[in-house]
Length: 460
Image (tube, rainbow, N blue to C red; front, side, top):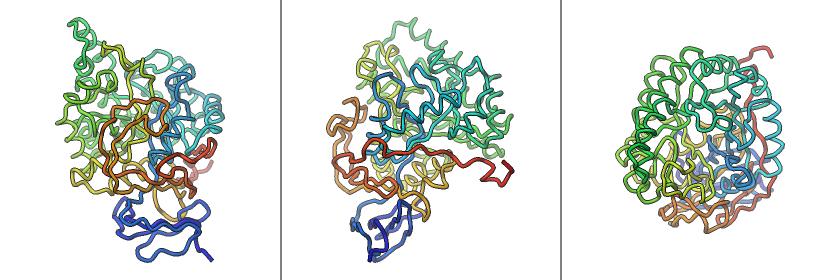
């Protein structure tokens, strides 16, 4: 009689060590055993040789609904499943529906649940006119974190939260134990530099970086972390393109404050002088892609342990929103769910960085960050059997090749990936077989953080 439902043997990648000829065993949708040597019997038993066996990734930054009638969860979670991302955390800036109340949170859960092929958690935000009044009700409704912006991309869908209101929101979040994540670009500085670029007449690929130079990002980071220090709220910068930003966060942590920074996979992969020059609007992202020297600096920050999370900031804009010859007229953001895990593995191996960072930065730390680590984020007995397998087979990425993306373009098209995803499991059930996504819509579930009182022992 089989002891387990599923056993996978290969090179098991854990946050602290790698198990050569290791195995992971699952029972009833949960991790049951991790070991080395002869794997136990199972109803499904796969001896995978040199294949990498990692915890399913948690993508901390996904925009499924930024463009109405475009992607939605039916597509974002399909891309996630294909890419070894078993949980997404979706952003609250949905076109036509700012997620800023308990009612809006419930509406989004009800909307996403029949579509989702992987598990999902949600961010909440605030309507600037309402202030922090609804933060507690959104925490009770199950949001995993809150998101704000120091820059106003759109007054309704993606509004700027000015310093006094940011302070009010952080103070309201602090008692919940959740984290305040913030888009880090100083509004006044960006608008000043944008006007200078427009006045110069420059409209090509160089315009975007010049309109958002490093100082615009770094000024905002000081505001964010100082607000966290003042209120006692965990402060998180949701994307940083500059090595200096990670040093700023480290200084705040040294002084005893909760200050973390997320690095998007595009900042570890693409550069300004080659990729932005070549791709134009298809590489327009806020904050901008930086020069190659900065890319390598960020990898050093990974190796030093100063990066807290790696995410995609995934959004699948239609091509007409990304191909305007006037660089600044394009929408900002790129799709990345399908390729984040193999891109990180590629980059780490090329630089001699241990793959343990893949398990830590794309699974363990995100689970801790969103207080989902009671069920997610590690190949640890008792947690969900969310697993991704990569085999040592080179492929050239093409977003249109397998039909897992609502758009057929990607800034990563043409990149050679030495490791290819061959299987993905969600709660012990296979959702991707290496050639296609086999999970049906509705397979994924809404996941929420443990309430603070359960974690700390406080009274409800």
